[in-house]
Amino acid sequence: MPSTALLRYCPDLYHYQRRETRVCMVGNIGIGGSNPIRVQSMLTSDTRDAEACVKEALELAAVGCEIVRVTAQTRVIAENLQHIRDGIRLAGCDVPLVADIHFKPDAAMEAVKWVEKVRVNPGNYADKKKFAVKEYTDEQYAEEVAYMEEQFVPLVLDCQRLGRAMRIGTNHGSLSDRIMNRHGDTPHGMVESALEFARIARAHDYHNFLFSMKASNPKVMIEAYRLLVAHLNALGSDWNYPIHLGVTEAGDGEDGRIKSAIGIGSLLADGIGDTVRVSLTEDAIHEIPVARALVASIQSQVLSDQYLVISQTPQVSYDPFSYSRRAPERLSINGIDLGRGATAAVFTSRTKWDALAHKLDKLGDYKPEIVIEDSAVIALDPRDDAAVQSVNASAEARLVTIADGTALHPIHAYRLLAARLDPKHPILLKDTFDSKGNEDFLNNLLRAATNIGSLLCDGIGDAVIVQGESSPGQSLRVSYNILQAAGVRIFKTDYVACPSCGRTLFNLQNTTQKIRASTGHLKGVRIAVMGCIVNGPGEMADADFGYVGGAPGKINLYVSKTAVKFNIPEEEAVERLVDLIKEHNRWFEAPVAV
Image (cartoon, rainbow, N blue to C red; front, side):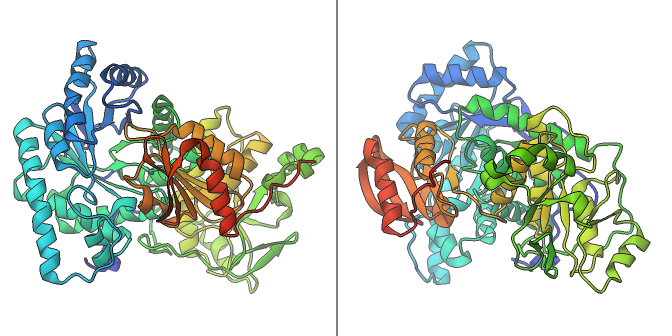
């Protein structure tokens, strides 16, 4: 692959421009081109239960889901897709169906008969996935590629013959051993895995496909998508395939929504993405309002007439394809350190601080740390040469932010500030330059997570303030949760939890809540809750402990991505997980509430 220094994923990092793509047709739904950004979800019902699947699909379509995905674990299970499709069509609904395929090419060959689109995961469609360490010779590598091609070509030909679409969907958690050993567990490996399949499809003149690059870590996900688009651009204008966006295993509640907004929202804000799926560990019907609100939030900002275009743009101060936190000089404000090596701080306004003053000792981990009016922060317009030069002339480090009322999109404004500001000065991030706020908490949360989270994932920002949410307590909670989701400040237990689907071997929602109840006080511990083995070990690479469905009613427990306890009865598994955490000296008792 070419050096990332030569790659570009976005024509202008200071101005919104939607990426131009060809159209991929999924039934009667066009993805890409001038089509709107499509919203989709996945059934949680067992694929063998056609009646339940039809009911759930109709419910999803009724709330605005435009494409419905359903898992097909085996060829026999895939046969039931015919009955699911027929039931949906009999009800007068034409929502396209997508078969989700892992491990079983014969399941794909059956599914393609009945659905409008097939999703294949290059990491486990035909390649081996045993976490084996092996030094591949070029000949051995070529042999495995040839075998993969032999398995994949029949599906390509059937998709072409039947007019089906395909998603080449790479997951960070399921790269093949071959890719892992040659390219590593990296965004580069994710991209190469997908491009192998795309080259085969193109060799047979099949082009009705799109890509995805999902990961549970927003930084990895953002980097992988950027790298993919940059490589597609480098390959030529006819590699303009649409993009499906998603953060896999995002979790539930505010955490799941924030993590999704950071990953999906930051890419949409740069013009990347033609269809989205928000993966929540909740009933699928709850994903659709979040996805629709996220798309609407981005579009209302990037297409807003109030934002001006930045002219005479400098080169950005960061590498879009490799995370590195900006390192200004250390600065202390009211006893709180900012800058190099310091934890990102949480600011609030004087009004919000005063509203919370009577219960500051009860706010726990969500306490405000600095009042913006007392911080001596310098607020400026980054296009103001005199103002920027004045700050840069200071011999001492100064905290700098963007002035309220500046008519620039926050992401673009802070990119410009970071590019023009002397590196010694720390930066305070704002979600919006309008501090009035509004009444819709979900929109406030998604906007804050997108704007602040995107910048944090690019290494910009030493402190944050959420201005768009008027509730003092909620604005602080969102601030801290964004820092946690972006991996900048870990102040509570971190969970990686996949959404339910037909592969799930236990009740994910109930189990996740039980695990939270038992482990929610373990600050700095990361726990993965995975319904099955498809992405389990890989997505748990960053987790300390994993709880994975191994068989119906049976749970396997992991340390990192290594299974250490097998076939534990589900009713005992949460307690055994706690025992495992204790064995590895990561346990401490929850503080007693006063």
